[in-house]
Image 1 (spheres, helix red, strand yellow):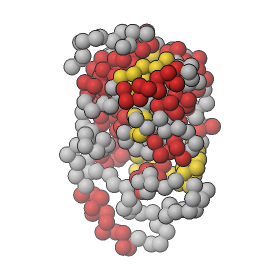
Image 2 (tube, one colour):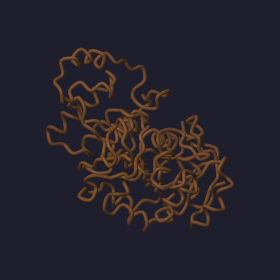
Image 3 (cartoon, one colour):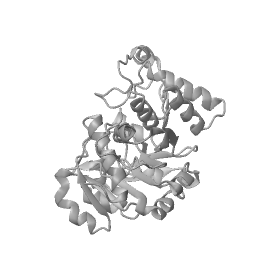
Length: 338
């Protein structure tokens, strides 16, 4: 049900730049205070991968499952009441797998119900459907009113360059995001991030960004969730042109990421792991940064970066809190937030 206290202003076009879990929770809150039919989520696909012969789009699916009310709330990803029989049965073939084969990978699991989404996506891709078409079909199947759009219909891969010799490989070697995030549990040091194919990929939603009344950068990892979207030609220039209407939400609270490797990654790549560090990354494209109350002492420093700073509770522990955060994000554009 919508939140009726402290109503948000009415906008006819809101675009959200989105990663996975944090963005999905924010979008769920946004739906409480803003017409979902007037919301477009432009979602990172740099994390996409092919495993078990299936096309997998983790951030897109996390957003759809969350908005569809089916996400596993404890994990923050995958479907609730999931079972894992297919993956357990796959272990039978590990011992007969030839050397060098990537069949039956044990490090990346897919739930039995979740498999249906990947079966559908893979079959539609083999029929020549675009990522946008497929994502729209999956979102409709889950009954979503929001427009869920992959950042591009082209293949873009987020690659992490290792900083030192480790179990993941040698220094300078590049590994996929899923290898970094899942296989190695983001516990290996990196020295650079590359977005393979981004320079040739046509972005989606450029016109929507240029015409949006509000653009919100969700509380997602600035490097590997929002970074791939920004790497696409035309995205940053569109955001810069709309800067007065762009508001970002810091995913760093008290110097730490609530989930995932953002804090460690920022530090390893030479940025400050703080709301101020996030401000420095977003200042060229966003006029406003929303930070958590625990970081209130950074507000003046953030405003010296040329951004308006709004302080509130950004820890979305409940949908109601997420809804209030979304309301504040919307009102910050009109200068009404408090």
